[in-house]
Length: 279
Length: 243
Image 1 (spheres, each protein chain N blue to C red):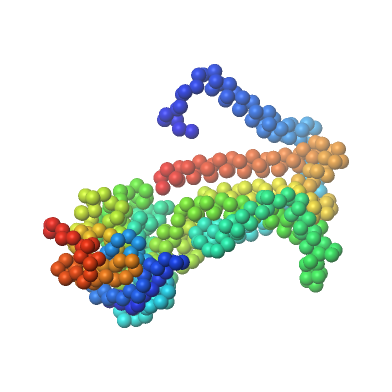
Image 2: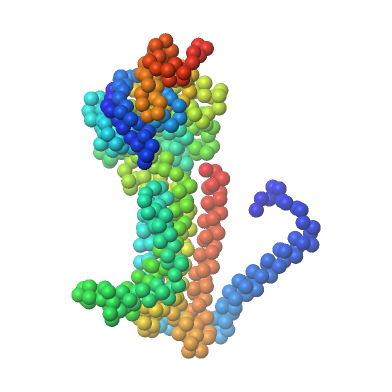
């Protein structure tokens, strides 16, 4: 990390062994599987690859996944900013309980999250009456998929923002307040710019997970091809039908998204480090 | 512009920060809130700014009740102990902030903002730093920028929390003389918090000595030295070599 004073205490062969071992492990466990996804996807050639991606079912899955991301990410960004602001800047009774509750979606298995929605909206569900009265279909339809993804990805933005906002303190907000700024002016001009990189980081992770969530969505989607299948579910169905190269072609979309996320995340982190050095 | 504090009480949980505090700051004066730490000085200053609400009692600005008024409506300038400059903004934008967040009808145009910010930065002597970020400034420079920022909204009252607390001794001496001269120039009703008696005696017209949430004595430096009203005052205030 620190290029100015390298800690050269181990003999060269130990260092080489450790670095080599680490690289081998990373290669074997991370890079090789990723490369295999693309290799399998392109096994039957580029035309077959694009044919698999432009199948109506695959396109429908892509559209549904895009819709889920477009609804979930903005909602969880707003909710995450609210939670980060409240929990990072203020002290109140029950605060630590609330902080633990935010982690709940990380703590429970996604399948349980899906089951929860089934319990709420299913045949004997608690909210079934209300939903029917409104003439809505929730379960086995896009609304349930969105709700399940909302639940699963809720912590990402809030988790990133709470420590960032906490470490920034409240003095700058107070200064802005005394200078005549209102709530939204303080948020827009002071609090969010100060926490910008943490926020971007959270949004990025939230988007990646929203596109890739499998377990909870699988429980509530109903797996209707062309209608309630997201990309991860489409991959599973294709795989179970022994259409391996098509399955890997769709999987390569998700993998590509993950790679883009990682690159963006690295850029955000580099910017943040530079910002911290100046600030 | 005068400030009146009437029977203000404030506690945090079981800790009583202020109990039945009353005092008056005549318009145009520079008053020091002096006392040992934990004596309630900063709490009182924050109540004056509207950053805390008193549990009981009233605050009058210019004879008008301002107790329930929101901090952003009070027209006070506040200089924080650690300056609280906006870290992402340049010095210029820091000072311009108060003007830029005004409601559209009162907001000056860009040329006017530029003129006023430049004038203020010149007044506090740091106009050459206008495009720097707070992290690139020394403590004394940050202090001056914080003051310019507070003055930009043309406050009727200036409040300073330990304004020299985090500066080294030499800069400290220089800045407090400078603040005194600045006050003589602009004659803004000002209150500053300090735990340093020498600082209070050198800078302030009048001193409010606070201890354990109560006012021990209000008066000029001579009053406190020559006519202490209690043993605490006698013990706390020592004669200092006059500069």
